Length: 177
Image (cartoon, rainbow, N blue to C red):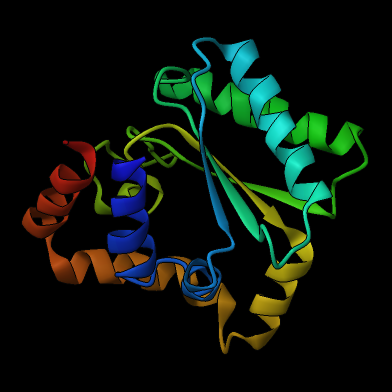
């Protein structure tokens, strides 16, 4: 959990890659669930268990959940399959429009990019991570943000301003003990 917390504090909050994260983190409303699943199906089940837990909790107890898989979904293609499966199961359970899924992975690579392109680091985390968010809270945050559509572009600019060497130094801090 130390690596994930360091990544969350340094990158997501510290670099303001998610302008909505600081408030819920400071209020201790972010659940970090480190899961011991070892395979694809176990990881899916555990993610759905966490989705249920989030739905059952009051928003001021758990606003959002990071489900971290240090032992599963290390292959990026398998991880993307898991993202699709969890999204589909959330929809089937009637929670689409209530929960939203974001995702992060150590080898995250946007389609059409090279592996080391800095923009990929906006979605890299020390471990495969499924981020369950309450859609109502996202809507509130987006409504209060002056230009939410510009967030991805701004994040890339932040990483480019830091430069490749500094981004890789940060990555080494998040991904090593």
